[in-house]
Length: 240
Image (cartoon, rainbow, N blue to C red; front, side, top):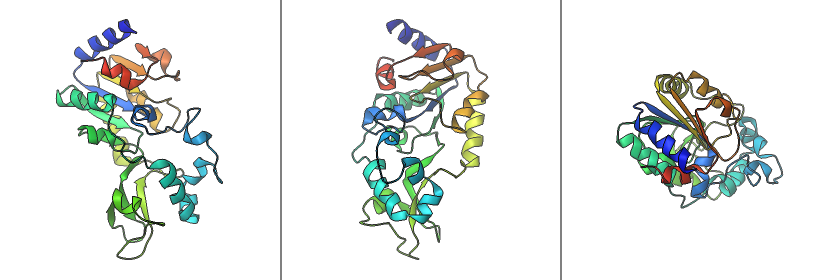
């Protein structure tokens, strides 16, 4: 592992336009469960499969059941940025990291200090009324005893996340493609690269160094210059 860490450090030191593409594994070390691991949300039992609960049609038909799952599994109170979030924020502050592209919805990259964060699947920190569009913060939704409703028009308030059956935000997609295509180094971390269309964005990379940091193998391992099968927080904690 020491040799791989040293190589990663050399690649980072020699790059000027680094982009990071991350998934659930970036936040598991902050206590936020992922979706596809052995103990992930997709392997737990509910009245409905999590994939169905987190769909647009289910939200519209059964908002009360959606919010029961939301409060039980999507909200992790007290979660704090870990070594991975903090290292990336520091790398951006030094002018080497140009963007964080994340599939996560927890806002921990921003909490660590990252500024250019592209959230492919939205964020739990922002919410809006489906009827009038009025905006609400996370506390408004999380503190509601039942399905949260707009205090102006009575419409249901939903988190500003991308549910199944919904498309990704076109502006976020365009900006992500631009950042990846301009990068001289792409670090992919904490993702199995199984969720499309998000995972397909990495095919726009034309730079010199592709690095993959993930505990389990990914479909892109054979294309990477460097593959590290460790927790990403642990890896980043050993870098300067």
